[in-house]
Image 1 (cartoon, rainbow, N blue to C red):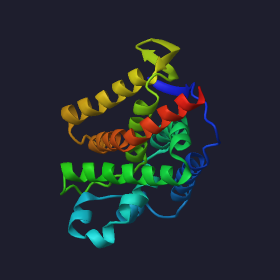
Image 2: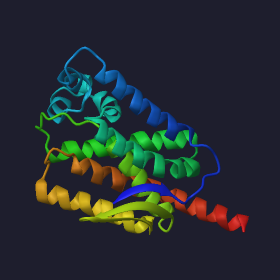
Image 3: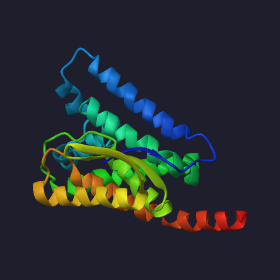
Image 4: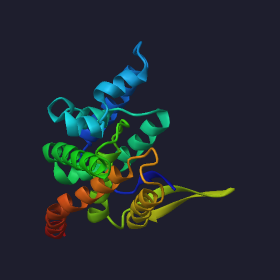
Length: 219
């Protein structure tokens, strides 16, 4: 299932969701045009658990630089699609400053979740999916019944349908858990996705009551 658009309007333009999206694209374009092998960038800016454990001071910034690096066009495009669809509503609820903080805290917890599963791994981790997983967890709590226009592919058959966010996102996190058990690392930081998602669920809970109170007051 590929989400295409949510039917959940916002009150204001998602400035930082848009800026995060642009920054990710800009870093990717900059990286592919540098006259060096990608391994050089990964060595210096990707998150490598072994380096963070054994040289925490010098490697600590890679928790954040790795959030803006991607392994290819499809990796970048998939992450940015999810960010654009689900990020605007979370930014709308949290406000600009708290959304920035939320994004980076979820990304940090996601990175720590990945590190905790294999502290001696020397495989670079890149991508915004840990932070975006936090946004998905928050969306599940705040807007479980928002309709998501979704492309559904079943073998040779496909359709576009409207699915409640709770269905789409529970299937999504279920797949992350399944893959983490079935394949372990498998080239994908499944535990970063899971950690980011749980962080988003927990961190957004206080704002659920604020949003519900606001809606009640406007009735």
